[in-house]
Structure formats: structure tokens, C-alpha cells
Image (cartoon, rainbow, N blue to C red; front, side, top):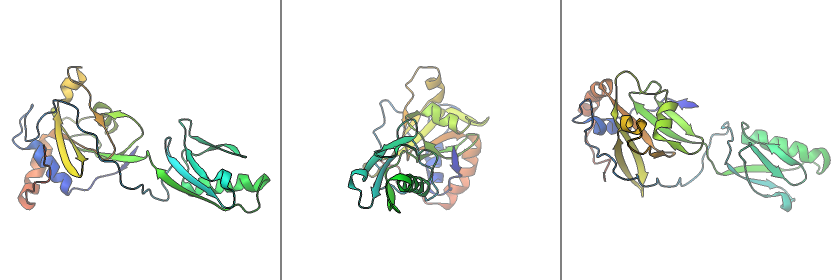
Amino acid sequence: MRIFPPRLSWLGLMLAVLVAGCAAGRGGSIPYATEAMPLPDAPSAVVIPADSKLTPGDLLAITVFQAEPLSKDYRIDRAGNIAMPLIGTVSAVGRTVPELRDDIARRLGERYMNNPDVSISVKESSNRLFTVEGSVRQPGMFEVPGPMTLVQAIAVARGTDENANPRRVGIFRTVQGQRVAAAFDLTSIRRGEEPDPQVYAGDIIVVDGSPTRSTLTTVLQTLPILALFRPY
């Protein structure tokens, strides 16, 4: 599901690094990956909007005042449910935290408690985002619903457009607090000649293409070139 268009700021610099010295094939400033990229840093905190929908895998901390046996962590299963004592299976996926809280309070109040006081917080969220930029049909920020590869991520952005150079696709990632990058040959990956790399929340994927190069000429003229992407 598409979330919203990304902002052109430091993403523009990433695009510039990817396409520097480019041609309609391999090349550019970012080296091609010869081994798996390192895993990204874990998020330091879980912050989700109040109207964000819960997804499978989310870990919820549910507290029911003066009901210690009910107050614990609950993981939303693949079917989209949590199982609570007394009230059994509760559908959680597709609901906001306030909606789920009200439903649990209502069920407890129907048979077991008078005016139950229920609070819910998200301890771990699987509803995180990655970015696809450059020559794709629908650039933007998208949800990572589970394990995802580069080919699948490009498909979520509705594939490459007619100006794309699929032989140069960059993945930018934060590892140990530093921005790292590697280039991939999407054509070779699709042919089964190279492995399809894993994509994680927080990754920024950039597909090379001629309109991207011309647009970033202006960016390079107005922004300083910083050592933002080291090490490579």
C-alpha cells in the first residue's frame, strides 16, 4: 500500500551519487554488491500515528486496570487476531489502537467487569516503511508487510518506467549509524544470474534513469556534495 510521496532533499543527493558517471548499463559511484549487505540498525523507538492500522506481527502491551492476569504483551498472529483470557479471540488487524481498546473494554464490560479501564501501546511494529525513488512508475514510501526482496519492492512501486536503467539500482541503508550503499543489476537478478537481495524497513531504493539524471543536474548545482554516503 502506498503511503505518501517522499520529499526531495537528501534523497536527491542519493540519486546523484547513484547516477554519477552513468551510462545505459553498469557503472556509477556506488560499487556493485559482491556479498550480502549488512543488516540495518534496529529502530530506536516505535512511533505510529494514532490512526495507523494494526498489522500481523505487531506486539501490543495491553493493560487492564486491577486485572493483572489480563495485563501482558500480545502478539497479533498471522490471522490478524490476539487471544485474551476471558474474552478469547479478538480481531486486531485493520483496526487502530483506540478501536481495539474500545472493543476489548466493551467485551470485558458485557460479562466480567464494571467500566473496565483498558490501555494499549505498540511495543513492536511490523508496519514500517521503505522508499522507492527514481525511474519507477509509482515512487513513494511503502509498508514492509514481511520478508521482501528487491524485485518485490520494485513491483510494489509498479515496476520500472520506460526511462529506467535496470542494470543500476541502488539500495541505501543505515548500518551502525552510518549510511551505506550498494548497487544491483536488476536485469541479472531477474534472469536468476545473481541473488535477489533482501529489503528492510528504512531502506531507500533508487532506480537509475535518464529523467533522474537531468533532474539532479539542478540539485547538484544548488546543494553541497557532502560525504553523506560513506563508507561504500
